[in-house]
Amino acid sequence: MSAIQTVVKEKQKLSLDKDVQEESIISAKGLNLWYGNDQALKNINLEIPEKQVTAIIGPSGCGKSTFLKTVNRMVELVPIVKINGNIDYHGVNIFDSKVNLVELRSSVGMVFQKPNPFPKSIFDNIAFGPRVHGIKKKAELTKIVEKSLRASGLWDEVKDRLGESALGLSGGQQQRLCIARCLAVEPEVILMDEPTSALDPKSTLKVEELIQELKEKYSIIIVTHNMQQAARISDKTAFFLNGEVVEFDNTDKIFSNPTDKRTEDYITGRFG
Image (cartoon, rainbow, N blue to C red; front, side):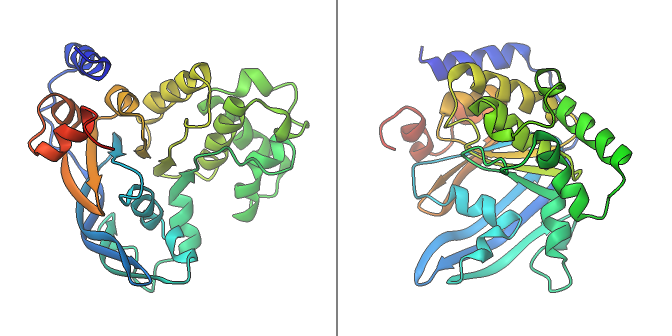
């Protein structure tokens, strides 16, 4: 039995049957995206469930990160991008001209592959977003900073050094700081683009444990190359290949009994 199959078996033992109908918070419908003449996403249809972890897996260059950055429209920072189709967030098409990008990116936060703390104090890193949104009172900012750091599991490690540079933290601490910075503006959805790929195993475990805690309050979409990680932490998994969604289902089913042979070939290491 492979390591991934072992993880899936353990999850199946621990999981409870859920007969409650799932609510979708994000719905991609007929989504196509081009970088110039190169089509990166092809007719993507995905229903992202609320308050669950959705993993996106697939080989390099298959459109995983592009899809993630399209969900909060950061992909549009690339000038040669062209998009058609819809992504509905609470039933509103995010590409509608009336959508406020600042509000969208606050509601749909992003954590990147490499930790990217600002060259500021730990406190100012977390307070940055709330300040941009008009919160200026020190007492209110202090409350937000503590709440965000507690939610990211970092408070006890940094509470006595909030005035120190965030760049002095370890890699794993920096990534949890970036998660706390994201939480400080009270998002509903957290996008994570391979958030543990630059971390050591101990730090990776802490971030994975944090993700499991966060899904109680937030809807999480995580891109990962680590299939054992996807099997461990996600509820749903989408397999992307050449810009298309090959298969999307409960994670346990994707890893134990996939419908499409291409999915099986990928997760068993025949390619990718």
